[in-house]
Image 1 (spheres, rainbow, N blue to C red):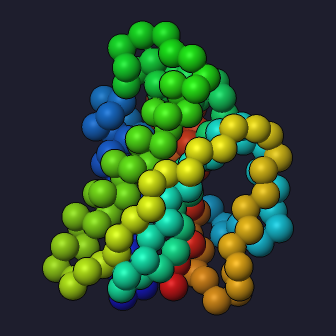
Image 2 (cartoon, rainbow, N blue to C red):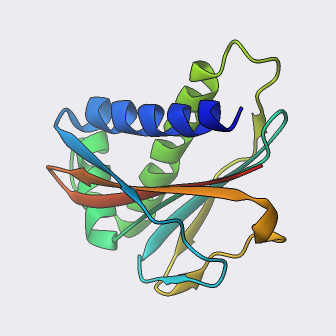
Length: 154
């Protein structure tokens, strides 16, 4: 089951970002983060999930990248709040695509609404992190910059 969700997440994120921004996206597998690792990204979005899989999808990016992505999605200049909402929607679309890729499994998961965080040096803390598997990707979007997608699951 572990390979199913990690493969689905990588494929869903890459395909979604390419379709949304109509450009080449470079996917780079990264080392898993640690429980206390701080991130200097200004915008973060979280979607929790529970079912056959349990965990958290996370999207992080700089404010500048979020503003460019939001402008691309909404067809013009956007505010920081609109850019953060757009980042949450990107993660929502990716999460839906992951669920679609896992459609053969009985109730792969249900999701929470996105939690949106604006600010530098946010700390990600997942209770009992040692019981979770973690996968982390960096996606370089040709038009806007780097977006980081992480998956905490068990």
